[in-house]
Amino acid sequence: VGADPVMLDLADVMVESAVGVMPVPLGVATGVLIDGRTVDVPLAVEEPSVVAALSYAGRLLRAGGGIHTWASDPVMTAQVFVSQAGRRGIEVLESRRDEIASVVDSRLGSLVARGGGFRDLDILALPRTGLLRLHLHVDVRDAMGANVLNTATEALRSHLEEWTGGRVLMCILSNSARRRSAGAEFAVPLTSLRAEGLGRRELAERIVLASDLAQEDADRAVTHNKGIMNGISSLALATGNDTRAVEAAAHAWAARDGLYRGLSQYRLEGEELSGRLEMPLPVATVGGAVSVHPAARLALAVLGHPNATELSRIAVAVGLVQNFAALRALVSEGIQKGHMHHHAARLAFQVGARGAEIQRVVEGLTAAGTYSLDAAGLLLSRERQEHRG
Ligand code: NAD
Image (cartoon, rainbow, N blue to C red; front, side, top):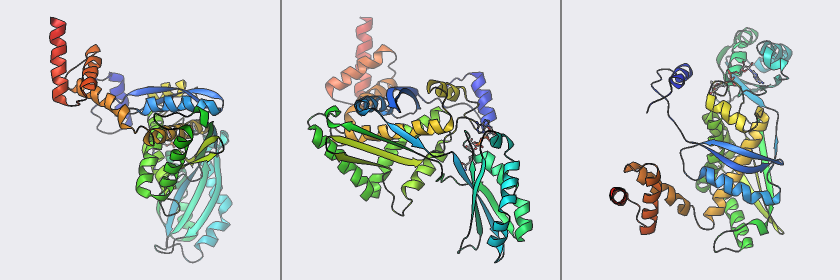
């Protein structure tokens, strides 16, 4: 695949041994009403139906006033582990709390100037390894915070060793991001719900049952949450964010009480169906790839230049709407129906159809109800013969 030379230069400054770039489709889901504002959501994703499902479900939820969101301050946690810190290690470090805070803040000048910086410290002795674990909670403002925190905590290394007489094993951000969360909820009147072959109340009851199921059955919960991440990870990728960090935080949170559960929950009360999702959301609008990738800058412009907290609120709303779309389809007509159209289009592309030919091959495959490369090839050669004739 050919690539713009600027993108090749960019790839080279982003990773080592770059040999090219991997284009992923960038779609825009339209008309999602979040906190009273209609948001167009850029999604970078290779999976069919994600963009369409978000637009569709976003429109359904407008009837109830759309999605309401909230978020914590953007606080990330760095971990420092100290070995051989001695029995008085915790006491010694507790007494140096202010010095620890000022070493961290001295490395975070620009963050402190922006209202961020050190917030809190907790120290724990881990019984099995005997390591002392320091958790440094830092407001990273609009950054994801990994490099920032890793640098700041490295600066603590020699001080901690001197004060405790121990050795620092490592200093690294924790991807659990427990203190950086965002939440979203909606409530829609049953009158705005619809699905083929189901009454509105029955549809809502089946969505609630599917939500309860994801609280009970871990294997179902994984897929439930994967549907949420279809929206969130695609938005994260479109905006140049670290998708692995966002995913790791989400799945760790889903298993926080020992049983892996669905991240969202639904309720039916009177004539209203409501949905709710709250989870860690470590997304950034500066730093990492976000600041250098032109597609990420464009995606943030489409979103109206949010700061990181605003982006996390959009992301959690997107996750909830995406989840609602998947549940609605799963408990009614199923998700295969929409997928077959995309499958047919990919078969057409694979056999060489281009431009308007793709749609004609898709129509032929759909009419015959046969989805195979052979059938697509046959339809394409007929289509070309007719065109020549
Ligand atoms: P970064 O290193 O680019 O730092 C952000 C920079 O932006 C800082 O210099 C900060 O001063 C500046 N800045 C400007 N305006 C700001 C604002 N409004 N708010 C906050 N900072 C502002 O980025 P980062 O977020 O520290 O690190 C993210 C990168 O680290 C990602 O690429 C991630 O993949 C990578 N990483 C992740 C891990 C992990 O997840 N465990 C580990 C190592 C590296």
